[in-house]
Length: 388
Image (cartoon, rainbow, N blue to C red; front, top):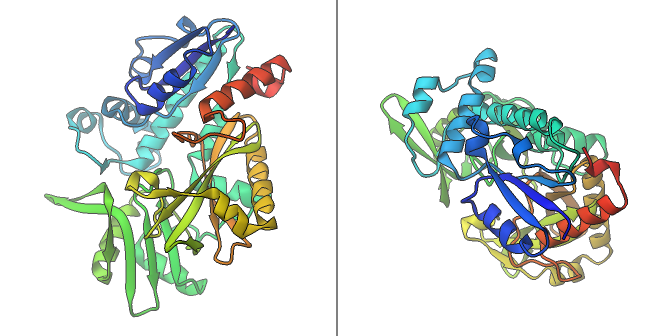
């Protein structure tokens, strides 16, 4: 066990806890660098990273104090772009409100600032091995740029409708492109945050969403919810989409999902060292398959049988996606299989898509163990892509 593992993350998060639990017997030492201390200027990475350390950047999610720090980091950049932003006083006065969507544009620019801080500090550390690439993380958090990259590499992704700044623009572009069904996402969101599945025939309107609205004075606040709402009133749908459109949106054609056993489904495919290794088939009665929405898993073997040779084509696509982010050891790819099981489309690529508890690869390793084995093999082979 020659390596010191340095995890940059939130110590109380489930991700970091699972990482420590899975890997504590496989490395000589695990050191967790809290985002709260790092972003607050209370510690430096050079105090943790020793020669030949393995460094893993984790998601900054599920820590309200860290979220406020990221909003602060993103304040100046968001203001300079003439976008709505939370001021220093507003950030300081924020109180935790479960599920509230604060300002995704400002959060993302704060995350960019945080990642640049990590980059600068890592250059001051002794030679080490970084599991994930900062440039890849930045790109994967931007749904629009990721889709453009994949499309340029001839990877099947949904067609997009371009910039959408309000509901009227959305309706116009749907009419122009003869598109009756769209999936609306926050460009910098994750985990179905701010997502809306909307369809219309021109007179009837249906929108399914995980987002709730609440009025506070003259403001309309947004909240994530585990309960999926269905809206049929066009004015209510317009209010929701107009509010979401105050942030950057990523709007794409709605791709129908294949179904088994009365449920639609999609796949989370984890690639490690550019090879598909772990699979989760997520099934739902609604179009939203995210597991945190209390959806269930299904048997991937049944899907493999249904797809036949198309399964190998899907794996080849995932290898191609991973090749677009070759400086990162792993990524999580969300793939939808079309009805008929012969075609597929890549929906998203996730920088931190390996939180797959109770899932093992063909060799019996959980994702974190498989990743550690892979990085050790790369180090032994002196592969430059994983070294700084």
